[in-house]
Figure 1 (cartoon, rainbow, N blue to C red):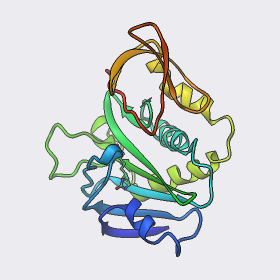
Figure 2: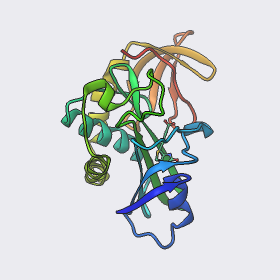
Figure 3: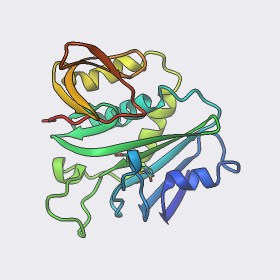
Figure 4: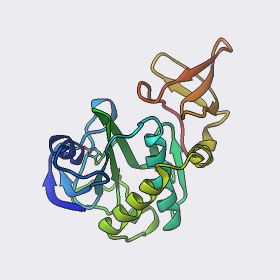
Length: 219
Ligand code: BTN
């Protein structure tokens, strides 16, 4: 495990050092100065959170996003949180997003970046939330990172992972979601982890995880 005090982004760190890093490397930083989210968004990364990236060399990348979400959800459930996943990979507790995941592919290798709001930093406003604030959970970020990484590496070769993913996303079935150019009612999660939606014309369409994010109410 590589522990860094501060870094621009643990995902970027792996990208820049990919040739010298071993398969299944784990990189954790106390804070990030340029934390990145999906679709080029910024991911606020003050100290007190878990900022971790995992490297898998020479893998098929299609189900890794799903594996990441399920690993985080399982571990958070195990320490007393109630967890929902909003497709594709936002982990919610009590209606608040506590974790985001950014999976990136680099020449047949995969980097899975996981950010979890663990502790409440004094510099954050009162409305900010964390596992500590939502549940009073006080867990060491490194211990949490290790548990999530272990789960993730266990699930990478699990061909039934989609069943666990469907469990955590089941709250979405029958609900309305808005996406880039429309809205519709969620029908199911497909075997590949895509989202099947019935649109306003009654047509069934598939939303592909790499391209689209959805908006919906989460309670
Ligand atoms: C999202 O919510 O859009 C995804 C956020 C992913 C954040 C994690 S923190 C560790 C890793 N390093 C980054 O720069 N991003 C990911």
